[in-house]
Amino acid sequence: MTTFRGTVKDGQLVFPAEVAEQLGLHEGDAVDVQQAALTPAQSGGGENPFLAWIGVLPPFEEGMDAVRFTRELRDLDDEAS
Image (cartoon, rainbow, N blue to C red):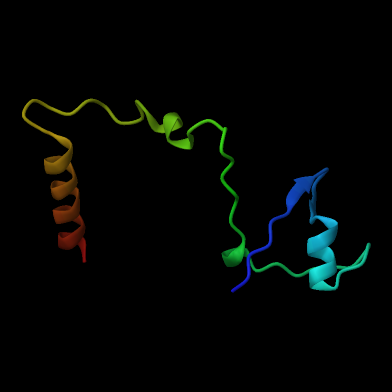
């Protein structure tokens, strides 16, 4: 599978000229995109996206740690199946 990188500019997906040439695309051509294959590229200097999740859950109860919390969640998932 070959990966090409484009950017969204003014609501449109834009590929560099070299990529468009490799794909045989010309200005105005329509392109079908499969959503499952489209993934946002990670920029090197951007803010960590996980920072937004800090503080979403309340603090752990006394005696609870991340490992125990996760195991209990997984046990609940097993019971629901």
